[in-house]
Image 1: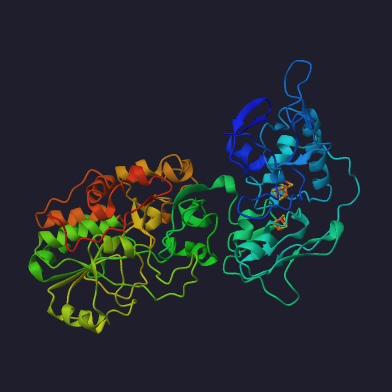
Image 2 (image 1 turned 90 degrees about the vertical axis):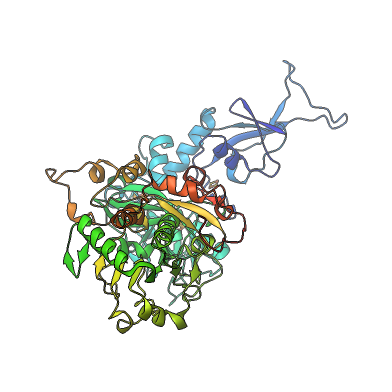
Amino acid sequence: MPQVTIDGKAHEFEPGQKVLQLCLDEGTEIPHFCYHPSLSVPANCRQCLVKAGTPAVDRETKEPVLDEDGNPKINYFPKLMPSCALDVTEGMVVHTQLDSEEVAAAQADNLEIMLANHPLDCPICDQAGQCPLQIQAYKYGPEGSRFEFEKVHKPKRVRLGPNVVLDAERCINCTRCTRFTAEVTETHQLTIINRGDKNHPMTAPGQVFDDAYSMCTADICPVGALTEEYFRFQARVWEMDKTPTVSDFGGKGINVDVWTNNNLVLRITPRENLDVNEYWMPDAARLVYKTYNEDRANGPQIQGRPATWEAAAREAGRLLKDAGSTVLFLGSAYATVEDNYLLMRLAEAVGAEAPRFIDRRGQAEGDDWLISSDPAPNTAGCERLGMQPVDPALLASQVAEAGLVYVLQDDPVTAGALSEADLSDTPVVLHATHTTNQTSATVTLPIAMSVETLGTYVNEDGRAQLLRPAKMVKTMNRSLLMALGTGIGRKARVGTPFDRWHDEANQVDCLPGWATIPQVAKAVGVDLSYKSPAAIMAEVAERPAFSGATHGAMSLLGVPLETADAPAQLDA
Ligand code: SF4
Ligand code: SF4
Ligand code: FES
């Protein structure tokens, strides 16, 4: 492998790599703003300057020229170079700000110029605490500023579109946002207007920045110039907990970070996974954050009256016993593989037909990228378990013949698969997420949503990915507490009713399916207890359709599954 020397240390590199990316990959930080690994390289912020040179070669002999000590002589480029645009070549020598006072001084000067017209907005800026400009100014900038004149004023609080707000004074003109709309979504909705210190991004006159991925510009904006309209001034970033998990918005399995404060989901941002969503996610997948906080089914109910979990499970068990093999089980493409698997085992134990699921494919408008035409996140997981979609033409008559309809995390009435009249004569056990569900139930067992559980979704490309709990449910069991890890801070994790800041009202009284289905099974004398959802998935991963998809293997980036045919029925 060819070699390059960075700050006196030799590193191997792949031909075609740029100095900045190589340094970042090798753990050497170089401050930078305009560079983004998936966009073109304009090298316009000039923050990533390094001193670089290549070995001198004798023109006649083509041999390296040696200095007095016998080491290769290095011809340094006459000026400092922007490392983001500099190709690494064999034998190159690079000095960063860590090794060269000249580089450190140039970077500090660049920051001083960049801050000459930058407002002192940090105390009220949503980017504070995660702002590359703020962080790099502290680490590499000058002590103060020599610019004492009034700063240039530019437009503030400009609604570029429904989801993005511009503060032009904070913009450092890195052009990441304009390159995003030109190169990634190709809507070309943003451009830089004006000249010199008056310039900033803007839409064409009369145009609205309504790109379906517009909020990605706020993600990549290195300052607080572009902010998400829904999240502005909601919380400081250091007050929030950030949990890496997977979105339940559609079948693409977008990797996300879920940001919570006081057990409410306040923000969802994309998490890098080059095999799934790279660095991006659509606006619509962020705006579902409210569904985790509002109108949640809260506490079990029997005939619409509050009940304990034990009583509700007992009643569900009694209804199951009464109906026996005539129970109609409906699994769900919104529920995890683990929950659907336990439902299949329960159906098998009571001698009923295997669960089917309501197939949502084609019900949404997809865009051939990260917005799927399947609004449900786990259709592939259901299919790989061997579940068949319900036949809409037969479902109503199947309900009429059933002694009980048992529904896991779905709403057949809202889905249009059944009418309220279809269900009027048949008892229903429903693992419900929201009070807005239109399917009325005899027994309601509120179920944790994707941000509150530990489990697996399989996306439409056959990638098994792990969900992690980002917020607490009212009764945390050991598996959920362990999965919270250190991502959830003191505020959400260990608050008690005696803490002034603690608000139990935001903890929904619901449980994952893998916690409640075993309780219902116990009520009919069936043992479905597992040590943890990881143990359930370890059993599922023994099937060819899920081979290798253990929780440990899925980790943060998921596991691509073989394109195995789903088994026709549950293994004994
Ligand atoms: S963009 Fe960064 S440096 Fe500028 S005001 Fe906001 S937090 Fe401060
Ligand atoms: S708004 Fe942000 S991303 Fe766009 S040019 Fe300015 S600093 Fe860069
Ligand atoms: S990151 Fe290299 S010039 Fe901006």
